[in-house]
Image (cartoon, rainbow, N blue to C red):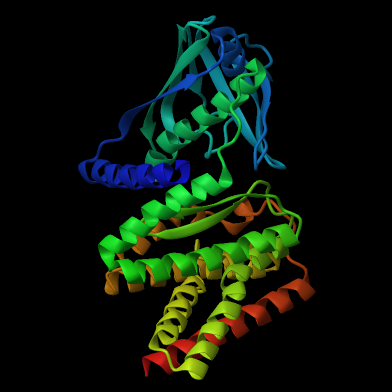
Length: 397
């Protein structure tokens, strides 16, 4: 459910940011609270540490030291995977186990760390027996539109990251939720949302096709040696297969993206064969629905599978060319989604715009695709697109 709540929160923050931009509001305060099953001493040490590392699908670390000639200014790096990002802050107030107040400095911080002016971050620590309530407050004057979304969303994610770290340190970490249970719960909610939009029979067809599609991604992850964290379904939108580790190169990313619609070629072909052999119209409906669902997913627009494939294939190209292509496809995709009144897709494309409009070089954190892998990926992509176009046009004619 975390993925669903983050998506809904992002949509809310996006609308809020649009309203702020419209009315010229730049100074904002965001509050995020999290209950941590760990003593306040452990939570305090984690929040006030000058060097710390967080495990997860993407390892994140912070390492800072006093700036020469100062006693309250710290500078260093935030590392995300193998990328180091400059960070500097001033410690305004330090009350052990009670409160911590810092100011993020523009001087010495990368724009992604300091996206605003007069950016203060306060943490308060409230002991609750052997547990702690951590409240984080961000207050800043925004310089960019997208920081209005990324700052409060990042505070939520960082709160969960601190919770996992502290509970692991305290030995109170709970076992991860059942993958099957998460899939069943999110699948049931997604089925209900599709039933609301269509009818219960077609909702069942869509959910079946999503299971097959996301299963293809999961199989591809296991094939290349990536652990699968789980398969989740998102009401009104679709599904996602999540890896428990980052892909090691762009060829791997492109292959995993392709295998969702690629694996579905087998079942779509089986539906077509069933329609030919039995002349049962249900098989025609399944084949057409599968072709449309997977065909749309192959559109070369981030974050769709087609966008991931094309972006991976362009990883050997000039970063500026890749950025221009991604921007153009995003604009065209948003225009088409508005024209067809697919407003959920419009919202998804809007949420991915910050990633797309950043230079491609700043997004690359893995090895570019090899020339041979690129050729195979492009060939597989074009063949898969052609297959779904043929099936869709045959049954729509």
